[in-house]
Structure formats: C-alpha cells, structure tokens
Image 1 (cartoon, rainbow, N blue to C red):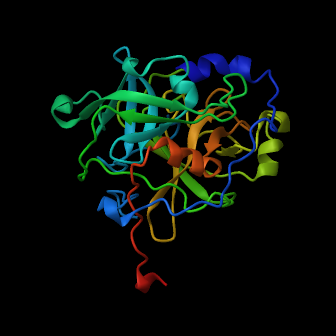
Image 2: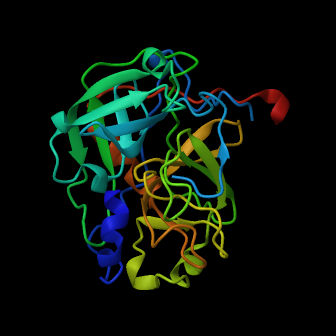
Length: 298
C-alpha cells in the first residue's frame, strides 16, 4: 500500500512539531438526540499482524476505501454520510476515484456482493496542514454521495468525549484487512488486534526518536513487536471502549516502519486534537449519541 512504500523516505526526515498545534479541546456538545441513533455499539458485546478474525459485523463502522477496483485504505463511519480516514490515503486524488464499501467482512465470500453496501465519494476534506513527508495532521473526512441506513451491519463509531484524554497504558483495538505479515498478502477477512497505547515518552524513546513524533501523533503496539497494524490498515480506526461500553475511535492508522518490528510501534493520528476540525468538516450533519449511562454500572 502507499503508506509502506513511502515510509522509508518519511522516516529519514524530521517532523516540525510546532507547525500545527493541537486544536482546542474546549468544544461544544457534538452528538445530538435529533439523529435518533446511538454510536459505538459493537455487535460483539463487550491491517493486522497476529490478530484474530472478527465476528461478522463486530465493528459495523469499519469501511474499505477502494481505488481502481482494489482495496486501498480503511475508514470509519461517523455519520450517515461521513467517514474518517488518513489524509495520506486520499492526498493527490479526486473524490470520483474512490469507492466506499460498508457491511463487509469476508472479501472472498460467494455472497459478498449481495451483502455489502457500496457508495461513491462526493467530497474529500483533507486537513489543510497535512504534511505528506512527516505525516503530521494525517486526517481526512470523506462525504458519501448518498447517506446510508443504519442496521445491524452498519453503525457509526463514537468520537472521543474530550480531546485531552491520556490513553497511555490502556489497551485499544485496531482492525482491518491489512497484510498478515510484512511480506504476506492482505487478509481475506476483517481481523482485529488489541494493542497497548504507549506514553508520550515511551514513544519518543522508540526506534523513531522524538523528532519524528509530533503532538498530533501517538504510538500503540508491543515493545517486542509480533502484533501491529500493517499495510492496508492505513486510515482505519484504533478504538477503545468508554466506561459505558461504547466504542470511541481515538486514532487513525497513520504510519510505521515495517510491520510488528520490535521497538517500532504503529503511529496513529490523535483524533482528540481534531474534534473541532472534524465537526466543521461534517457541514452540519449530526452525530449519533453515545448510549446513556447505565445507573447499575455506577
């Protein structure tokens, strides 16, 4: 995929961490009961190396972004007609070149075409400060040509409740159809892997070094490698369950060196730094609300 082909160049360069400071985390309430929907409800109550096959529609917000008839990147449905992905997945391309596939699981199944939902892309909002060399501000919002209807196979993920949450030390889940290993073919079925989020200092101390990690990035993975996001998962979600069990997309798969190499974790775009920017890109489209807290869990 494009990400891994250019990473060898990217990792030789220095990131200017001061060029695009994180956006304000003091934001208005984004979810609305007017949408008549809830976000982040996985059908399993609660790019991938060393991961497990997901249950069918376990993550009903995960989409495949196609280009030229081939799987290109992952994406995350956040409204009836908007998806989050990585800017490097769409940089330099026109909206008409992409196709979005939802409700997918096994890309080789005989009945796949009768089950998936396909949409075109009407518009691309790429972050205006995206740097294709450092991968800083690696985020984009896609607008579908037609909205989708929600069901057991199509739902939205929640955005983070706030932008200043420190997830270090917690376990998140990345999912996608990426390669099962650095030199292997992409996965036929959607897979997932749980990865721990690293502290900022641990990320700086990794094989990448502090200069390559901007304030808009964070690391997740295992120090000894083995499990990671890999080619094909670019643009897909890294998510975590909030206290009420709703899945929040906290990161977008951005870049890394190789796949599951020791001391070289996956690097993700920090969604919490872009909540205001995402809201503006939605053009007034409302977001589904998280489920209301269950008093019995208190």
